[in-house]
Length: 115
Length: 113
Image (spheres, rainbow over the protein chains, first blue to last red):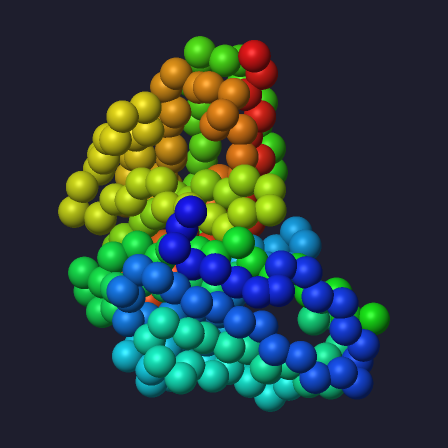
């Protein structure tokens, strides 16, 4: 049990659908992250939030919209996705994003398939 | 261009032997390095890390070695156990950017009983 949960674990959606991924951490951390892992590729950082403020947007297309209502919850809203967006989406958290902020703890991921 | 490279996609070792997983990086600004382990259907879990001020860090059966001049690090697992079979990711970050981890593609380790 890593203390970071993600729902749903699997999601199949059409290109015209709107869906949301949810992440929750029970570790008392203040930083949360979204990563994308495509087949045969390294994990790619998408977004970073520190104390609810977005501090990093790694040139992610606007069809991905993050939301961080508090330090424990992170959402990724999806709309008009493309088949190439099919991937494993991982959420992570850490104490904070600065030096000494500690290691990142990952959730189990959401396996997304866009048809 | 990949800044963290794990050139061997897989490694198979006999139980009880040493596993050596290699990682190379190109960005000279990286000063903190981590290894994560991932089982199927689970997220990556932190294994061990090393700061650039050190060249070795040991934690039980796991030791990470850093060669800054060669921009190379390696993870040694001794003795290897079947439960170590997983995908191992090398990651790196630059000072003041602990939030921005750059990952390698991962190495699949199989430990044969």
